[in-house]
Image (cartoon, rainbow, N blue to C red; front, top):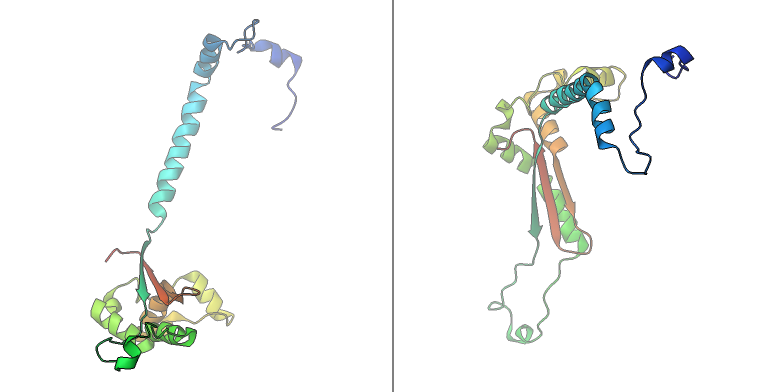
Length: 186
């Protein structure tokens, strides 16, 4: 239907405007007249696209991301080392296992509980939401996910906290990257 050929009578009823003049230049007046005849269609499509974009942008929940990088160094002091060590000039480097250990400490549940208590995240609906939505209920019904309504308040808050937290060691360095995202900037 959309690509159906027009009959000769229908094609002859509307004048065709050539936007290219015989000398090869663009006919701006003809182009302007053709656009003016289609102004309602152009305006309608533009308003529809603007309205759809407005609705989509307002429906999307904003995400605020924060990132911090920590440099891990040994706790050595030049004044406390023996006199023989002062001249060597070598620093005690942290091995990769020590960096991984620090990452695990940042991810610990004890630290998470302290952050949740300090920031009062249990009273924040973003972190202590009830059911988690229809998709979560369907996933828990087939055994893929956990049912948030059966979880305790602390478990729901910890689960939401760890969903938004990302901690990773940057390769071949003694730097840990910690990032957190939330719907609220504070």
